[in-house]
Image 1 (cartoon, rainbow, N blue to C red):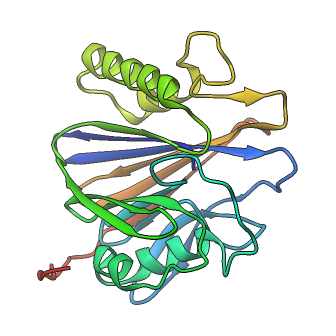
Image 2 (cartoon, rainbow, N blue to C red; image 1 turned 180 degrees about the vertical axis):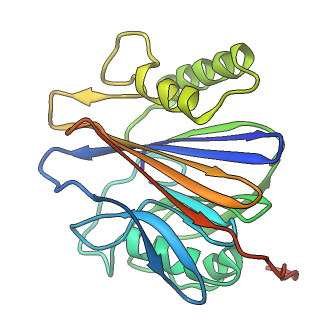
Length: 244
């Protein structure tokens, strides 16, 4: 939920996420296919609350969650429900971006949600107000969690990502997953695969490849050194247009 990249390439879209979590939190279960509201979704499941931080629907819509909005906030529990469950509710909707704008988020901890539904949206809840931006889906993007990385670290990570794209203009999923695991300057507290005294570290890397006829998810469990891949065939989409 803490480092995310988006890379478009010849009709395929790659969304990849590093999940940085406390060592005290139970690991998620590997990706599986779940039935939703007139859809099927692929996602790993958080065993703590039952939500997730990354998912892809069988119509090619995908989303990924990051903790925090624009800046580090002071947690104020108890919250009404987990962000992972809110994420699933939003993505389950026929129009996830519209649902983000309509849903009540009072008593929900701040988050950022990246939604790809043929368009690329950045949706943020700062604890008081919603913010939603339409981004260029033809460009590559990187996000780092506002709760974990300061401005200096964010700038450095952006530079690493830009260098990777310049050196690898047509990366495949293997190369992207390698970037997410092994990029840094030796400062393990802020490298892409991070570790802060064993109390908070990167527990998994999840990559989605949204292709014309299929959505593939590859999940790397870094603690147990295991890898899983699950795919769901894409069904024809009737695009719904309208204002938010």
